[in-house]
Length: 235
Ligand code: MN
Image 1 (cartoon, rainbow, N blue to C red):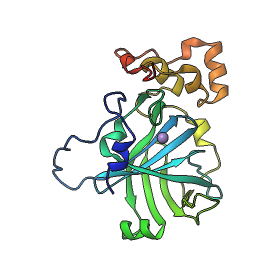
Image 2: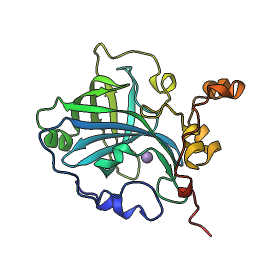
Image 3: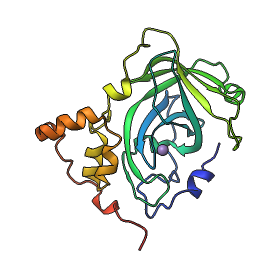
Image 4: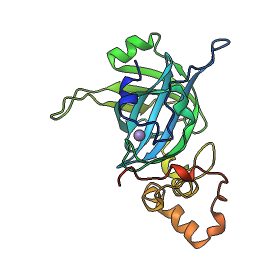
């Protein structure tokens, strides 16, 4: 686990994403492990599922987002480790940069491994864990599948275990807002100088129609957003 790939893909003079190069303050005592899901309207909408482990955020991109239904398996493509501070990032990645688009902190909290040896579980491709998030709770598993198709890249599945937090309601549709700012994607794009039209395609259409009919329901614009970040790197 290292951030080499993360650094290679990004230009920190251009994107507002954290570089992960500041030394984190030494931990006073063993702390719970962080968990975050970032809803990300990049070239495709996806949900970045991240678990803190050994000083980085292990990361998977889940195109359809998590499902509370244990019979639904959600594809989760492994992506590069991210720095711990990334869990606090909500805003805009400039277009033309890696992952250009709008990022929302869709859920956060802590996680507890159920697999006794996390490194062995990751290697085996079968990690069981409990989430203590604001939206997602209870027991889950990430399981690696055989590589499909030509590129030989293994993919994983994110699956809810059967427990009192399982259910059939569509949580991605039901709870589309940021857990830190309560904004939907289009409101984040509005406040931070992003592409509103593109961001809106990641928000539930029914909610957008409701907001269009009654703009008073929009979250009030955030003051002091990072408007200056919005700049194309192409001449
Ligand atoms: Mn992403």
